Amino acid sequence: MPTTITDPKEFLTMSGEQLDELFRNSPAGEIPSGKTDGTAIVASGTEISDEIAHCVNLFTWKGKIFENGHLINRIGIIEHKLIVAKVYKGKSWFDDKECIVIDYSKTSFLAHSVRDEIRAVAPGIYLGLVYWGEKKLMHFALKFPAST
Image (cartoon, rainbow, N blue to C red):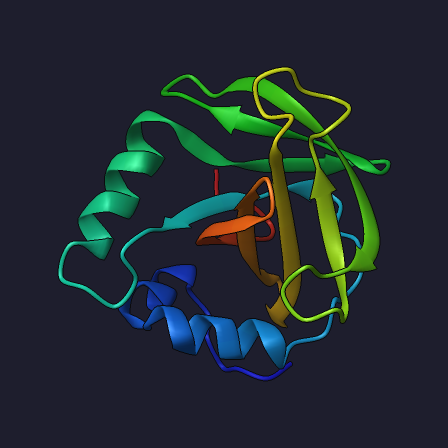
C-alpha cells in the first residue's frame, strides 16, 4: 500500500491533486466485504473541509455496507440502509487502471447517474472518487471495519 495513513480524516488536509495522485498510485485491492465508516472529502485541503465532512457524516452519509457483489449506503442519523449499487472490478474512468467500481446505474432511481470508484490505499482504508455522469465531483474514504 502506498501510504501510512491510518485515519481517513487525514485525507481532509490533502489537496485534490494529492488525493488524485494517491488514487492513481494505489492498487484496486480486493472487493471488500462488510460495514464501513465513510468520510466525504469536499473542498479538500481547505480550512472548511473538516467541517463539511463532519456535517455530511452527522446528517446524511455514514458509510457503506458491502456484501456479495452489492452494497447499500448507510444514510441519516438513524442509518437508513438506502441506495443500492453493484460492485465489481473494472477500468477506472480516471486513469484506465483497475479499480473497484460501485455502479448505481441499474440499481437506483435516485443515483442512476452516479458511479464511485475505490482503491485500497492502506490496510482497511479505501480512497474513492465520485462521478456524476462522467464528471468527477469529489473524493471520499472508507474505513474497514466500521467503528460503530
